[in-house]
Length: 134
Image (tube, rainbow, N blue to C red; front, side, top):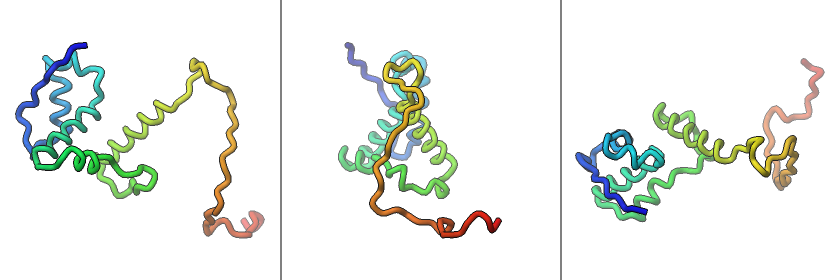
């Protein structure tokens, strides 16, 4: 293994981290070494660097950028850019967990029993009405 140092030029505490990460990934000199590094990871490193320039410690920066729980977040309230970022994260998670026919542990028509939740949530349409009314 060989350690390489790639300088981060023209970056300040006010810089756009996603743009700086793209510039670094597509730079002529660095693209060969960064082709296996995801753009999300480079952007996160730039976010940590920007927080350091603003005076935050590493622990504070990591805690701030850990991200909210995706299950509890209201995606309707996000901006278009943030929504695209969340969708990309969900797509990446889906591809990681996806089972393909070529996988050695692939099982066709797998049935899974989920544990019963102790308190069932009810909705207004779960009433005792029958479908015959319609």
